[in-house]
Amino acid sequence: MSIPRLAARGLALLAAAFTALGLAVASAQTLPPPAGTPILDVTGRIAVTNGDARARFDLPMLEAIGVSRISTSTAWTNGRQDFEGVSLKALLERVGAFGDRIEAVALNDYKVEIPVADFARWPVILAWRQNGQLMRVRDKGPLWIIYPQDDFPALDNKEAQGKWAWQVKEIRVR
Image (cartoon, rainbow, N blue to C red; front, side, top):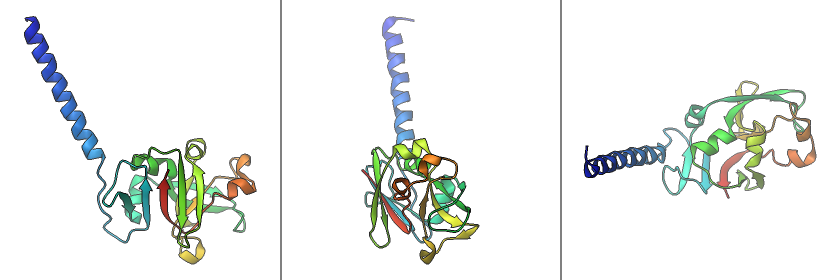
């Protein structure tokens, strides 16, 4: 085969590869809108949205990312509790987050800043179930950031407990 033909064939293959990559990236950038009542907005430095520069989630959408479980004691409950929710690491990956910290915002507009590095270091979850029951607002729900403090003694202190935001309505990636 001649050099010009090889070059043309190489360019065609390269163009096909970039087209396929572009389609994959474009499809990865979309998130369907919630079918049910939204319970969480993720905003800020994210690549994947479903409108208005935000990723809005209902409970089935969060469950579809994957359900993680933590059994731990807390400073606000008696004894060890079982929590179910989405890994914050997986949630941030799903929305294509590219910041180094989040700001969790509660229903009463309380805010707490958390380094994204925490989610790589520990299996932190955004829980919606406690002991098998959906969490109600009066029980720190609908969403509560849970650290596995019983599994990691370094998390059993006031500084770490300050990151356990409850009644979370929004996560702002900074």
